View (cartoon, rainbow, N blue to C red):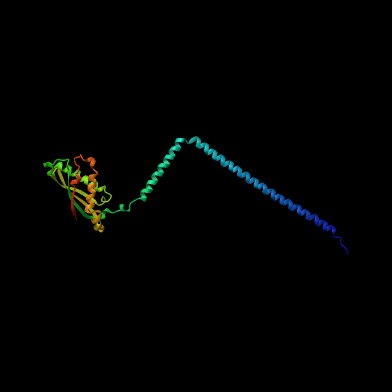
Amino acid sequence: MDINLQPLTQRNGREGASYTANEQDVGNGVMLLSAHAAEDDMNEGTQRNHREISAACRIQRVLEKNVKPWMVIVAILVLIIAVIIISLVVCSAIQEDVDDNFDPSLFEIPLQFNGSFQLPNMVFTEELFIFTSNKSKVLTAELQKKLADLYEASPALGRYFSKAEIYSLRNGSIIADYQLTFLIPEEQHDQLRNFTLSREMVYNVFRQFLYDQESEDSAPTYIDPLSLNMFGRLW
């Protein structure tokens, strides 16, 4: 028995063509949606940029309206001062000398130097010979302060200096006998005694101070550098 299949084949061909057309339509729809999505993204990005530019313009207008030139100058000056202060603090912290960190309570061993010097601008009187007289007390206190100031200001000896005493005033213009007392830690006793607090070091600090006082050579308490004596060391 013969069966005619031609109509079925034609129908299948039409259905295949229909499926192909549908697939093309779907593809075109997807491409169209993608194009619309891309366009929407571009529009949204453009609108966002416009909003940001608009906000920036508003901020700029507010600043131009409210910020005066003198405010900008003041702000710059404050910033410069802040930078300078911070720099100084940092530099001082970096340059801090480790030797400046010491415990004065450990300085217990006394080291003493005796000597004398002359005051050529003063005339000796009997009142100065009496050590309890007002004139003698005033001159003694002034000289002691002068000696204390010079050693306390010494970078090398200042930390060890304890006191300066004038224990006698004698005739010869005026000759003052003095005693210097330093305190040193026991663990560094030998090193300090032989180097930092040697007789030569203590004497040279005193002598250099006297040569630097030339502008005061007419003052009553001017000390003649050539008259300075330091007799030794007691401990």
